[in-house]
Amino acid sequence: MTVEISQAIDLTAIDGVLDKYGLEQRALIPSLLAIQNIYNYLPTGALQRVSERMKIPSIQVYQVASFYKAFSL
Image (cartoon, rainbow, N blue to C red; front, side, top):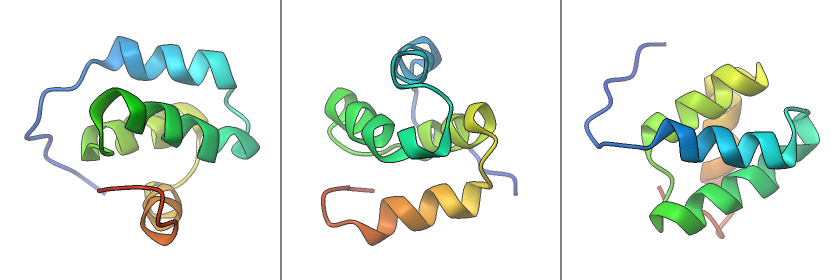
């Protein structure tokens, strides 16, 4: 899945969150919450970075982000 990143995101900030919470699948929701706290929503590029680093299919990351009302896309 190729996603065009239209907004500028700081990959070091995303990587910092992932390093803090870990790369296990159980860290997905806390990581997404922390990323949302940085941007006030979940940028597409951030979801893609989470998918790449956590080795979770991007569709699964998006499904989690779109399922929970706490997340804003």
